[in-house]
Length: 111
View 1 (cartoon, rainbow, N blue to C red):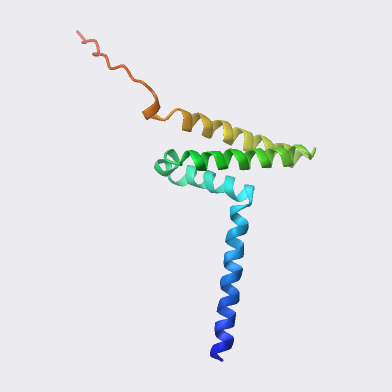
View 2: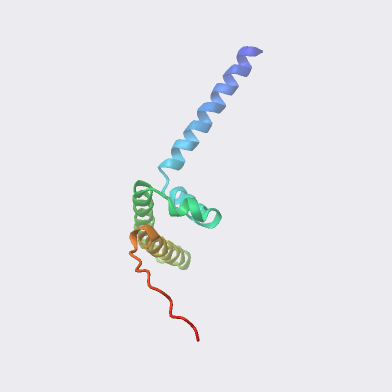
C-alpha cells in the first residue's frame, strides 16, 4: 500500500512539474502573469526586471503574430487588447521616476 501511495505521489509531482513547465513556455500565460501583477500589485509591477519586460514583449509579439493570421472578430479584439496592454506597459516602464529628471523650483508666494 505504501508503494502504491508513493507511486501516485511521484506521478502527481511529475504532472505538476510538467504543467509548470508548460506555463513557462506559454506566451498567453506569460502575458496574463504580467497583467495580473499590474492589476494586483502596482509596486511589484513597477519593479519588473528588464529581462521580465523583454519576456513579456516577446510573448506579446508571439501572440499578436498568431492572432494576426485569423480574421475573426474575437482574434481582432484580442490582438487590440494585447497591443494596448503592450503600449501602456511600455509607457509605464519607460517613465519610471528614477529615469526622469526633475527640476525643483521654488513655488511662487501667494499674496
